Amino acid sequence: MANALYRKYRPQVFSDVYGQDHIVTTLKNQIKHDRVTHAYLFTGSRGTGKTTCAKIFARAINCLHPSDGSPCGKCECCKALAESNNIDVLEIDAASNNGVDDAREIREKVKYTPVYGRYKVYIIDEVHMLSGAAFNALLKTLEEPPSHAVFILATTEVHKLPATILSRCMRFDFRLVGVDELADGLKSVLESEGKEYEEEAVRYIARAGEGSVRDMLSIADICVNCSDGKLTLSDVLKVTGNADRGKVRALFKAVKNSDLKSVFSLIDEMASGGKSMSLIAKELTRYVRDLLVVKTGNTRIIVDTEENIALMKEDSKTCEADYLAALVGILGEADSILRYSVSPRIALETVCIKAAKLAGADFVALERRVARLESGGVSVTSANVAKPAPVRTESVKSAEAESAPNEPKDALKIWGKLVTFMRTNKEMRLYALLGAHSDVEIDGGKLIVHANDENYLQFSEPEAESAMQRGLDEMEVDLKVVVEKRARVDNDRMIDKIKSLMGDVELDVKRKR
Image (cartoon, rainbow, N blue to C red; front, side):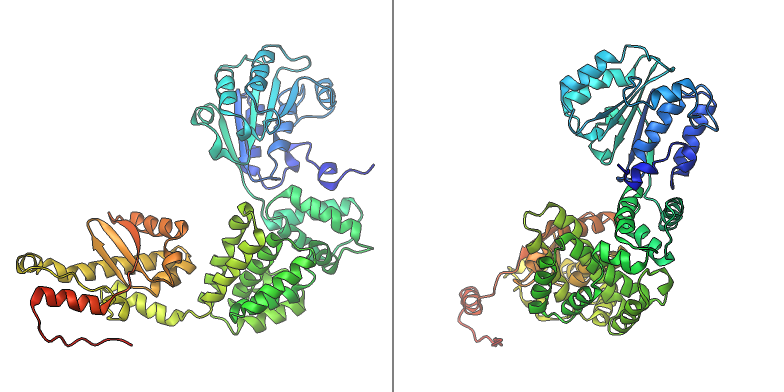
């Protein structure tokens, strides 16, 4: 039975590892100078080589004749450790062995000396899955293990590890591998397999791997098996589900034109064709990103057919760069939303509706408004006068006569800086939302955002409030963001209230009908 490409071409020495030179160099030097420590932490995205490097390192520190810091593969120890039944290099899956009893078992067995080499190595994969009790049981052993024991902890979610564990390990951060490095590695694999290929096909697979060597080789494996003869970009597009870029383009146009009927129809059509909501969102986001790249004139970095690039050039002419950047920001949120949503389809449709609303934004007007807000200017609109000023006594008026006029200006000045912060930090959806709004005030250490029925839900989203608060904190403005729903004004009731305080006087009130 033939092995999958990612297994067949798994690196056996450090020189074969893709894109992790900063880590490989350090590990090789430790072996060369005999400076092996007792605990290591390998963290990074999936498929970047954490477990592979752990296995190479485990063999290298036991090798009798290491070559340039890598295992020779020929000595007695290397041959023994290559066997599946060896007991000196133990790989433990913490996802399924995460209880306190499993940790205690490690603690009991670690005292036994290795059979073949100098070290007994414990590779604990997905270590973040261990329970709190298991971490506590492992802690003392990790801190002061026997001289023959080495622990290598591997995880994709390092933030879930207790600080007590982190402080006892030498940490290595595995980075996502670049497209060029992935493409070079894939070419070597295809040449070893005797498979001819098109340059565009290789680069497309490399980009589809999204920095993961394993993901790239898994995609390549399917493409190679589905291709007769030379591997072409057309073959790859069919396998990856991107053959019909026409529907993705149509969905973009529906969003751009705020055609919600077509948005729902196209998502339904693509879903019926077998595409997941996550893939639809990813393809749409990538298409808009490519349009933005085309807008800059840098089509060289886009991997696609000449026909599709020509269509992108046509679409990009009808869009402003600011609009495309804002659209990428909104669609980029879809991935995290879909990942945890119980109803991915509704989540994707909601994101597309938000994106469709953005089409009506006047970015030129927003720029002008931002300039006004930054300069502290006050634009008198219905938003500014919708909230009636509270009725005050003469003593209160005289006490606040000086401070009151400055308060709206200061609030608007801070709001303007907040809008600029959103633009600078590429929060284009919030930039559009904040830039079209100016009904704010400062009251008792709070920046109060008075939102109407239309935009209250957008302002009160946890992500929006968090981003606004983060902006204030980074500007070193000591205010807390509070979003309040603007109450509707009952003019008749207000008039009666004023009359009761001032007497029965004639009031010239203009009612907006």
